[in-house]
Image 1 (spheres, rainbow, N blue to C red):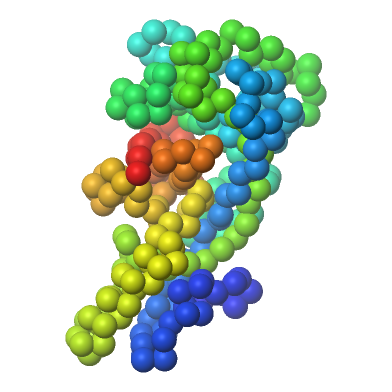
Image 2: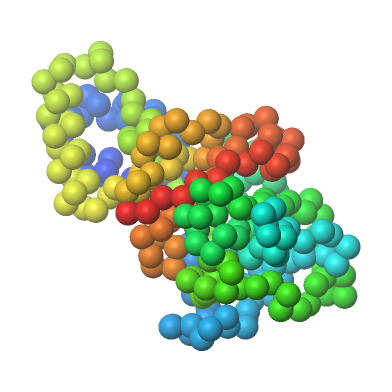
Length: 271
C-alpha cells in the first residue's frame, strides 16, 4: 500500500492516463524496502589488500569486521581457512520498515570463502554471524586480521572497502510479485504489459539495486533460483564493486523474528 511519506516510484509517476484504472491496484501492491548505498572509501583502483579506513563498528562491504576476541572466527569447512568478511551491517544504522523484523541493535555479518563468490555459493562456503550486543571497547575486539588469507577468498578479486548507508523506499516488484489484473479489461492489461516492457528497457528500471527486505531483482543467471527460493529476501547486494555479480540471502520469517541466522540461504547471480 502506498505510503504518502515516501517518494512514489518513477513508474507510477510516469504511468499514462490510459492506465488510470490500474493505478489503485498498483498502489495497493507497493511494498517498502531498505535501499543500500555503497560508497567506496579506498582509492580506485585499490592497492592490493588495502588497510580498512572504516571503524570496526561501521556498516561496510569488505574490510575488517567487528569481532570480539572471545568469539570463534568463521572458517571454511573444507579447508579450515578463515573466511573473509563480505558484508557487515550495524543494525542500529538500519531503519525499520513494516513487515521486516530486522534487529534494531547488534551486528549482522556475512562471511564467504572459496576464492570466488560463485564458488562460495556453489560449495556453500559462507557463514552468517549475528552479535546481539555490541561492545564499544576496542580492547575487547580483534585488532589484527592478517591471519585471514585474503588471496584465498573473494578479496583477491574484489578488494575495495565501501561504507554503507540505508534509506527507506517503496516500489513495485513486478518481476516476482505481480498484482492480479484478471478483473480488468484484457486489452488494457495487454497494452499495459507492452508499455511496461518498453518502459523498463527505455528507463533501465529493471533493478532497484542493493536492498534489505522487499523482493529481489533478477540478474542474468539468477531468475531460476529466485522463483524457487524459500523464505523472504533478507539481503541483496547488487553489482558488487561495479561488477556484474550479485549475491542474495533469504530467510524464513520465523527465523528472522527469532534472530536465528543459522539457516540463511545464500545465492549468487551474474549478468
